Image (tube, rainbow, N blue to C red; front, side, top):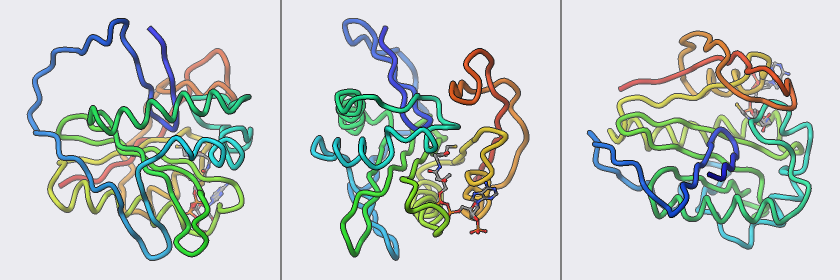
Length: 206
Ligand SMILES: CC(C)(COP(=O)(O)OP(=O)(O)OC[C@H]1O[C@@H](n2cnc3c(N)ncnc32)[C@H](O)[C@@H]1OP(=O)(O)O)[C@@H](O)C(=O)NCCC(=O)NCCS
């Protein structure tokens, strides 16, 4: 089994592409390919995005400090993950969007919504030059609006490393409620290579 991870999402590719046989309560509803906010375009990723993703944030050790993947050391790694994201739009397991600046068309980061039947999990990452300007809060609100307030999910949640204060703040500003600490919940190898890290869980429910 090969494992990729990006943002929060860990993608497991079973040998022979076997799927797990699970019963779903909710029919899957695909989010729109493009979501628009005041300053951002959220759109489906394309293979041509690999270079901008690699250069702007995937290789940045500051960006990946509290993520479950190590900084990419080659663009081929970025391409591999991107190909997986493009496939996952088709399978409906998760929907990762590229964040683009509406005015300049620059690629700024990514935000994704993982389908967990009646629940959804959100994960996000932004290139450093754009931090602290409210962009991720804006993007997360748009995904919550689609996922929760339009009735597609009963619960939308997200979690972050105990020390990732910028991320906690994003969840709070996007209207999520702090639920508690998940002890030993995530691998964040840059923060600790050997021990699982405690995380803070936030959610909003319908
Ligand atoms: C987390 C991240 C997405 C935030 O994106 P962003 O667009 O900068 O977020 P926003 O500007 O909407 O909000 C960030 C808030 O955190 C605050 N903040 C930033 N760094 C902080 C810190 N170290 N301690 C406390 N607050 C902090 C900002 O001041 C801002 O709050 P304010 O609007 O009240 O001033 C971005 O920092 C990032 O990509 N980090 C690396 C990847 C990552 O950690 N992703 C999340 C995994 S859970």
